[in-house]
Amino acid sequence: MPGLPILDTLLPQQIFAFLLIFARLGALLMVFPGIGEGFVSTRFRLGLALAVSFLLMGPLAGRLPALPADGGALFLLIATESLVGLAVGLSARLLLTSLNVAGNVIALQTGLGFAVAVDPTQGAQGAILSTFLVTMGILMIFITGTHAILFDGIFRSYDLFPPGDLPPVAGFLELVVRFVSASFLLGIEMSAPFLVLSLVFYAGLGVVSKMMPQFQVFFISMPLSIMGGFGLLMLLIGLMMQIFLDRFADSFSGLVR
Image (cartoon, rainbow, N blue to C red; front, side, top):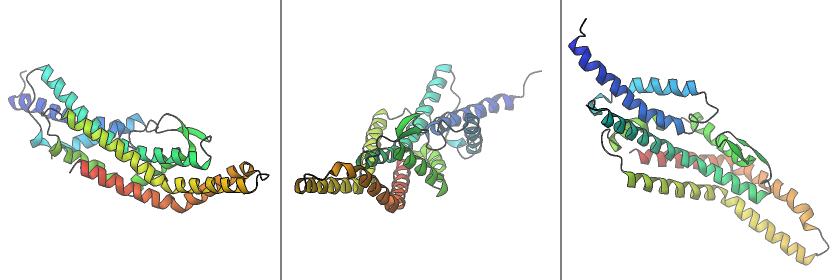
């Protein structure tokens, strides 16, 4: 029995539109902080990507190109959409590494660099303070509702990167460099009080060592350094998380607006 002409025309276009949205959204969710972590169920990520792709089919119907006539153009279009999704998701992932930088710097300055644990976001061992800050950062993103920027960014990315256009490779490279430098700078800014504390602390130990050579300063330096680091962390952890969330929201919102 021959198919209905309307279904023969509309059904492939609808499947193509869903596949195109899913390519960008799936690539983005694969690397987005919190959702794209290795400890998150693959079924959950797949189900979320499928559900959101289905919801976006209506609002984005007029912005998607027509179904290509040949398979090569279709493959290129899907690959381009996946690249755009990865670029947007990696930008948020790079911002999260600022907490990793801050945690490693704090651990080195307070004498806790030897305390390591498995970092679930990196899939390898890292300083325990770094793991703690990254985990808290992910938690704060979802508790404060900052993750809503993700779904806003998905929709707005279609204005910034229209489907069917070639991706601006030079712009992507510039974006990576800009976010890497911003992430490193933010990590150093958050760990700056600990750098100052370490400088003053060890300068004071040097003065004491010169004035009292018989006093074993290194015997008490490690306990005092750890206690001072934990005390300063208790005082500044709230401010550090607030600075991170503000910078995350501003940077990721600026990317898609």
